[in-house]
Length: 229
Ligand SMILES: *Cc1c(COP(=O)(O)O)cnc(C)c1O
Image 1 (cartoon, helix red, strand yellow):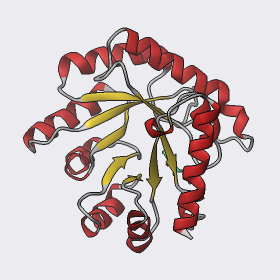
Image 2 (cartoon, helix red, strand yellow):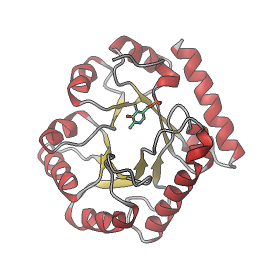
Image 3 (cartoon, protein in one colour):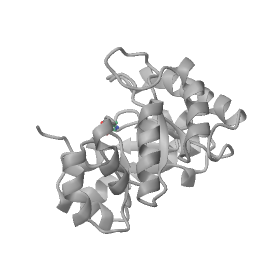
């Protein structure tokens, strides 16, 4: 099942990239493995999938040590201060940084562990009250603070738009995120301003996200099947 799903997803990524005149190799699949067991994750790894996303620290801390060291882990859950140290020790990329406090903690712990960590800034692009993320108009100031106060490598932006049954419905938010990214890159606010990341698009809408510039797509259900619990 996993092998077939992976092939289907990779083909869809390829086609979406080509529709948008983009190089498919610039788009990375982050396999979201929350609530999925080690054997399924290993199966995906054995099919060539090396990048995984996890939301829950406790769960990730149990699974990551059981999987190949070559696997790369993105933290995509809510960033809590008291978890920053363990997050730094387990993960390669933290996609959900949205305030200076969180950034400083990650910086502190990565220095202490002698490990460099990459981050993305989570933008609350849909301006949803209950969702974390920095509002678009506050994102520049956050990026400037992070640049001057930490040694973190800011790779780009991440969004988690409202759930929509219709994939096209979030296209305007994807476009808006890309423009925001372009604006920040022009101001030199990312680690690599020639090639910054946009983490957007999930199982239901990754094709639209890629057409609008996504470089990281976070896909769980379409790869591993429905989650229970
Ligand atoms: C669960 C989750 C995903 C994956 O969602 P699917 O619809 O299962 O592909 C992506 N990003 C975040 C932040 C998530 O929490």
